[in-house]
Image 1: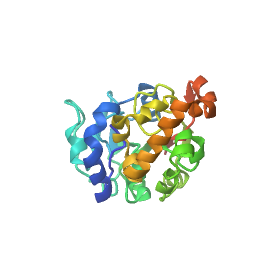
Image 2 (image 1 turned 135 degrees about the vertical axis):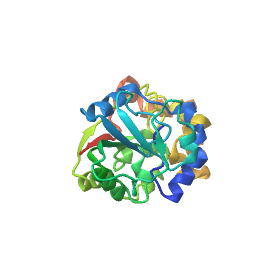
Image 3 (image 1 turned 90 degrees about the horizontal axis):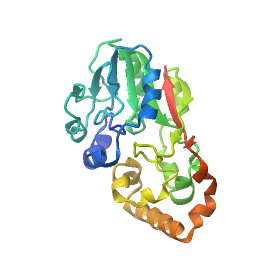
Image 4 (image 1 turned 30 degrees about the vertical axis):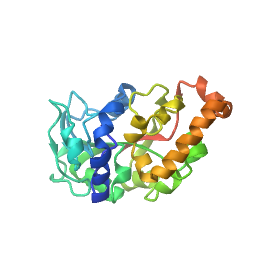
Length: 252
């Protein structure tokens, strides 16, 4: 799955630690995949950077993957695209080797996201990135009410700055209420899911805020679900079929 490591000792170590939990909750959501694959256009050769276990790799193109985490590489399914041990900032390919380079929920953990994105632009004629704009944490009830520490995690270049670095346009990608891929905001209409350790285990945010913060947030959410306070605060969410939580496609 995505949310993999694109490089750097800390990011690789993080996914070596949590990567074995990915098969439980992380998988391709076909509605999001359709948006990503459409953005690839007529490309035939695709480089997937920070490829993880291979989710969102298009089945009808010639894909090459790079992923520095051995744990993630080991979980790629039989028949998946060949996957090299390489980092985003130093891709072992000549200029313009691919029609398009793609990355899914990975660049936020790269030591230098801008360098990695520019490297993708070097080795491919086009770049497609699926990522979240985290500049408005109060738009999501989980970070607004239970995990204010989330804001401190966004200490690198903003998504707008990363897009500007590769001259990319940004397109919104609404998240369906029953999203099959269990990334951080996927359960925005299913709050009880965040009480499950297996759900949190496969999301890097929880490891990054630390166990004490995680436990406090979970305890507060559990209490609010029992008391009805969560539903009183977020009753409008229950009727929504999809939500704009900052997911964006960067297309260059």
